[in-house]
Image (cartoon, rainbow, N blue to C red):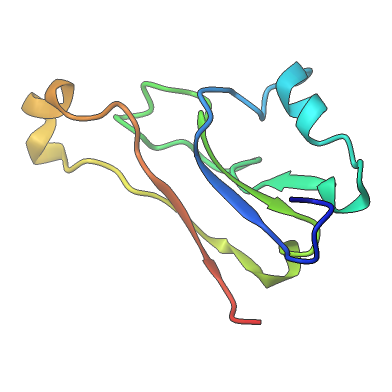
Length: 106
C-alpha cells in the first residue's frame, strides 16, 4: 500500500499495544520504508475509557500513512463506550470499544 499513489488508513483490532515502548510489531510496520510507510497510530497519547478503564492500552487502532495525517482532526478522537446502566451485561458484550476520528474531505 505504501508504495502506491493512494494515501491509506488501516483500522481495526490489531490485538497489539502499539503505543507501548519497544513494541516490535509496530517498529516493523512503522519503519519508514518506503517513505509513505512513515505511519502514525491515532491512538497514541489518547485516553482509554473502555469499561471503566479496565484496559490501560489500546489494541484497536487507526493507523494512517504520512499523507493522511494533515487530513485528520486529532481533537475529534473518540472511543465509543458502553452505558453505565448496562454494566450488568458488559461481560456479554465485546471487550472492545470502537475508536473513531473525523477526517476532513480532501
